[in-house]
Image (tube, rainbow, N blue to C red; front, side):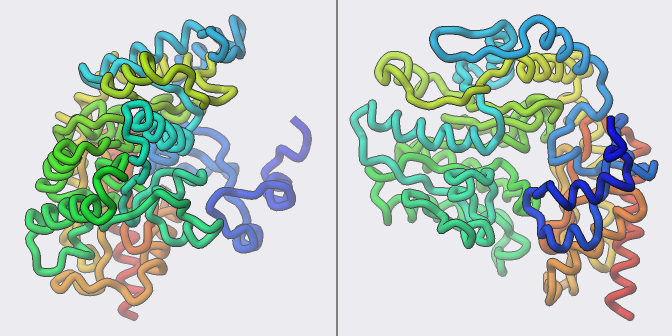
Length: 455
């Protein structure tokens, strides 16, 4: 590599040429870019040699941890055999076919087909088109509207960002597009008022039925939701929510879409989040944990109900990507799933590290600045509160969350702040001792910010 690879020069090169996603570039260039050079297990290391416990698994994705040479070796073998070929024109490759089989083996009896994409955003754009094609093929061409939730995240492509309920994303680019509407989220802490969590879960779920009545059942194609909202703040719905949503979708003939881009492949202690909640969706977009982020790949699990229509009625589905089922990415995903299976990581999250994390993370609920500390599997949130007894939030919630995040980062822990909620999503291979370290540093960060705000 040239001299520009040295850390002293890389920050300047990055500032001069690299536009980052979801980033205020003027601010970043003024503060300087942190350069991450390597990863090992649950840790990453920056260019100065500083070590960080990655409490966020990259972006919810490095489920098997960093530095797994097995994936590097599988990728190298595939690169040498066949670095690329497409899946158009009646062709496939060995890794793509085997990966489709492997994913379906964990998805449940009613899922036997996969359409491969390169990301979760593309997976959501794919099923958005697929749903409309499906309803047209079964003689219901007016069923085109998709109902989604406020404060949800389904990617940043045009359809994905439209279905996502992030106002700040809609303000750029004239979104959402037509045919997408939103209902409220199951965020009891902030929006539940005097209702119990169980009452609130039913109330918010039944907004779906009200919206269907408003729009006309004959016009609604699907309802899409993350089992647990990720970027929106690890919003864990009340126990009453998902059973009622599933009942409504079935009764009103609406496709149920479970966006598993974050929850899938073991994070909740089941292979998929819909299995954790005991519902059967019609369509499931996936990505992230499919390859543990080692290479970009995503997909859409398609239930037999829909796949049968596409195979027997639709004919050619005019949709796809140059890299759909890319053989090298598929090889990485296959090896990743082999590791998850052989190391029994899904069961480990359910029976061992998930309960341990829940107890340790939950201990932070006693902090004066924490309104609630919640988790499922290895997905957790801390709700910051100015007054925990009344659930009163800080006047500037973004500033509170950012301050806690920055204190944690300075002490070697990567967490994410979504407004005034602190989010955690560590690798599935994290140890008990590393969970203890996460909680210790998180408490130190909370202490520091609480003292600053009381000073």
